[in-house]
Image (cartoon, rainbow, N blue to C red; front, side, top):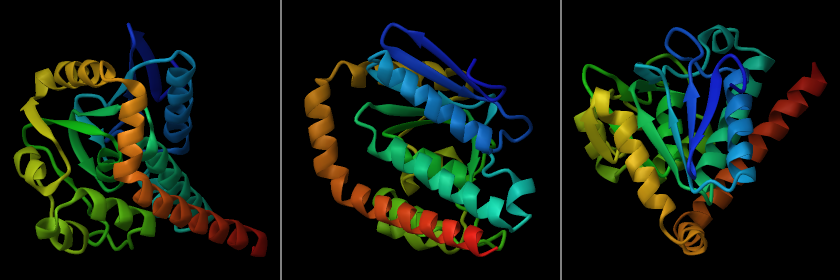
Length: 237
């Protein structure tokens, strides 16, 4: 166990990172820090792939609303740290497979799009970018990520119009790659992680960078811009 919200386990060369931060499994500073620590451990141990999942019924309900609703410097810092985590997942040379065990909204949907392969649970679950609905403006790095992962035919509906999808429609909208029964999600994601880990690591990384390199550079610059703006605001207060 890394902290109260993040647990790391490893079987063979597959690492499993489990998130459980309480009701709705919100993304907090502890969760972000714990995932970074888990990814560091996976790298140190030379794992072939990582499976990331939440508890039953929730991948994550998004950022901690107590922090977001405060609309202060901590809110800005949380969004910046969330962007940094999404960037790390998106640019990871090691395959990251998401086992979406239920709801994934807001930054939960962005985390899904940041991984390499996404398996979702079929059921009465909500997946989508709800920022417009709750009165928030999407960070620029989130827009870049959405442009890369969501087909143009769904992009405006998903980003601007805050459309919420179930697992089967989320598959067509670019949030998921595969849908299965809830009880089989983690097993199915692990099987995919094993398959990806069997690929030559150097060519996986090389081809991933050819595919994602330009968008990684743009996301890096956008996250860095947000970080500098947050630091300037902090110094001015």
